[in-house]
Length: 174
Image (cartoon, rainbow, N blue to C red; front, side):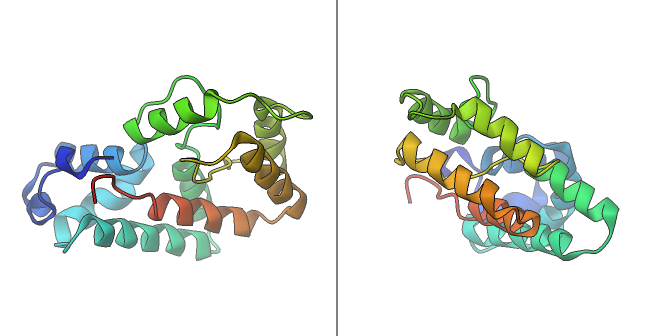
């Protein structure tokens, strides 16, 4: 995500709801449940940087992850599931398009295909998608990470990992 495509961070509280939602779509993935969670925050708070904004949203997601409410857990999972499956050919965000293109230019390592691993991951962790920082990593490294996380079978750790990945995605051009 090129920061030049984003408005000055100090202007965000003065933007329309749709414009604030579009910022979230550019930084994360298009996701109405994330809009519901965070568009108000973008109106109410002034941020010093986009990194601060992303950290504040990560805190909101972490609060949902720590909640014992089933509806909060479902809400969090709907946000995390907005991330495209690895290897998916059609994705909406520019960030994910670049990552998927890099990932799809490589062959599956021997053993299981990325599609099969996505299926196994989603069976192991219903409601979640495997989320990892892809840029510059080999497909074999990513599939080994996916396998080890499936074997770990820790849904809470998976939620935390997904939040962490989405909250540290660098803005290019920085």
